[in-house]
Image (cartoon, rainbow, N blue to C red; front, side):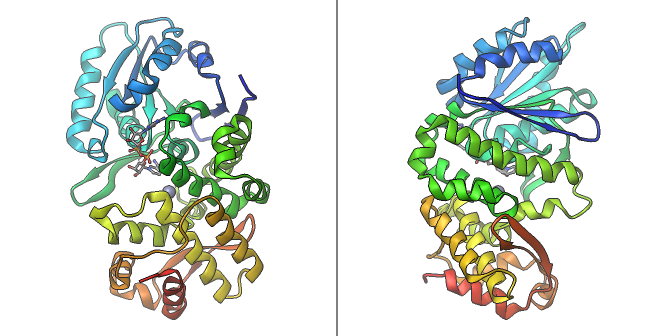
Length: 368
Ligand SMILES: NC(=O)c1ccc[n+]([C@@H]2O[C@H](COP(=O)([O-])OP(=O)(O)OC[C@H]3O[C@@H](n4cnc5c(N)ncnc54)[C@H](O)[C@@H]3O)[C@@H](O)[C@H]2O)c1
Ligand SMILES: [Zn+2]
């Protein structure tokens, strides 16, 4: 077992620990037993993850004491829907009974984590749940912060709760089976953490190749830990997203979401790839506005390229990007808001950015 790192988040109801390490999955059961979350752990996952890691996870959970029940959902974003939430709640009710205190362990990416979190928040007005994220995106981002949601036909994440897990247990070895492209995409969120708040993380990423991160368990655990620390600190300051601080986690996402939407059904860009192009666009806007030096903006773009992420886009019409970004007609004449990097490890939130600054930066990243 390599080194483990612990982050303690002070939140409104109770503190939540994030434990990150490599080869420490066997510690999960005893930790859960000590926490006394309940009598019956219920593992929620999907067949793809269970095939790869199911046995090891179930073995770890058996150390809690009682039997381990396993529920699965289909391996698709469609599992984040009201029908699958309803099926999951019924399955929980069937497993529950007199004298039982069930709790959920959510082993998967953002889909399993988001769906399972809503179910844990709603079933019997709330049962404890644990995040056991298995994708890089889930480990550094979606498993932390308590945002849970399912989608409606009208849009993504429209029904949900902010309800905190009792533990976030991060095993970096899960990432060994993650496809290369998914791994790189997750690195965009790691880099984002460095850019907005952690210059040391940024510098460490500049010095490591994606291959070194994939293969070097300690190097990877450290980078994960630093990125999680950024997210955890921001969540601590603004748990319910009422103070505007959590906004900075959206660096690269205004443009990124628009690129995902505009290239839609073809899935030409993963979330992380779209965010990487979005970070480059934000850095260019910041440079135009005189908020960041040309040198720092160049370093940001170089880091993304170095991690194997795109910083330009193609195959999408600019008009489609613009349409996806502007929620109303006034968006371009004032009502817009951007997270802009102001240096390495620093950022700011700006509103009312002139249209010509936005379009110039987007055109600069467009390859036709
Ligand atoms: N709650 C939040 O704060 C938050 C933040 C960001 C994203 N999200 C949500 O997260 C979702 C995306 O999450 P995601 O990118 O993790 O996608 P995902 O959950 O769909 O997982 C991606 C793919 O990787 C597979 N997989 C998972 N772990 C694996 C492993 N260790 N080895 C091999 N394959 C593995 C999955 O089966 C799936 O096919 C979206 O629905 C998004 O809305 C939520
Ligand atoms: Zn994201």
